[in-house]
Length: 131
Image (cartoon, rainbow, N blue to C red; front, side, top):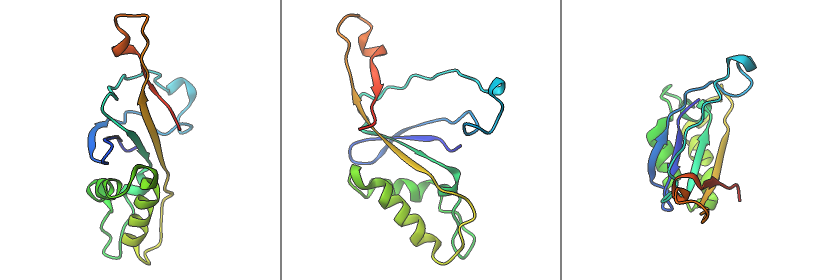
């Protein structure tokens, strides 16, 4: 799985979250490592999750779409239109070249939620919300 991209409100990539697992359902349950990673979403607006089919889509010269074009497409659109902008950019890049892998894109809108009961609240209260 490709790394997840933490995006600012303007669509710039603030950081990447390294992918360390296969896609869900690929390996047996007992092989799945349930370790979680905490991320600071304080200044982020969205989390972009995409399949390798997006990055590895090729054009007629057999050149991959890649991460740089992905980031440019995500940053070129308002938050609510980023999935459509990315897919439009991929399809335009491919032209008439057949698609050989599936493509999946999910954008999670982020907002910080604060718990006031604990002095550690800023470190434990970041929640992801799909709105």
